[in-house]
Image (cartoon, rainbow, N blue to C red; front, top):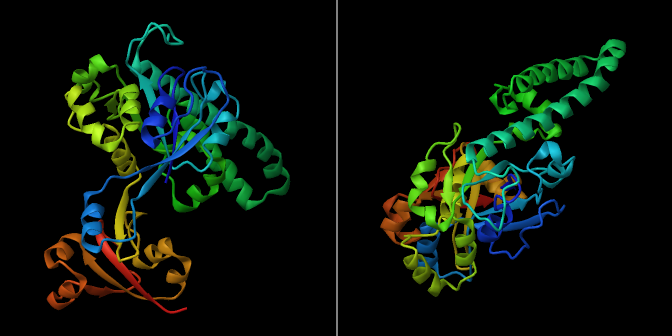
Length: 351
């Protein structure tokens, strides 16, 4: 899963990126063309419990890849092709808007207004998409008249619908597209087609006011103090609890961001277990056993026979796979079985 971090200049995009990934990318100097890439693990107590049972050589959590586009002038429309190139293949966008006051870091618009900034970002994304549509339609218009190719005519008509939506200040994702239509536009990389997670970057003195941002222009944002979270991420584990206590916080807000990112993309986790590794594997909701096997390795999908499956609660109740087998809670499933969140999965295959 890949999520692109965007937002106005001086909103704290790179600070949040560092907090999420434990990185140390330089902040400030907006206007610089840079791209930062890193990953964050999805905290999961179930993985911890399974590792306690199997004591594996390696424990691997599900991960989220974050891309900080480093665009510093407030949006896609003002940054040429920088955002599309940096966010190529991103599954979703994380939009950072600023609520904190800092005289040393002036806001480019000279005032703090998260709702306005979010509207600006949305507009920029739609404006960028509209320019892509218009360029393609201009090229297609003559081809459709001369060649009368059915596929090109269908693409031209679809782009016309998208243009109308964008000119009406609605994002591409507001269109109810069919499977074939989704395939046609996939290569355009429309940014307003991607789901959005909004993060409101507050000051340390605003942490008690986070509920004030519970709704923001149709979104349910996560409110956090990115600079505080960045400092926390750099501390050894044993010092983090003390740091949180100093600010009267129960836990880092970053877990909320990562989990919200997971939920945004409708992802579920299944587990593989053993002495070598306990691992969490993210898949889209509705994924069947055959394709889940392919997530682990293509050979498992190619030679799939059956999957041994047990739910996490049933396994923990049994205490071991052998005990679960005796109880009848470890079962065999075929290729069309829909994998559920928390399934423990072992593939029988033959290649």
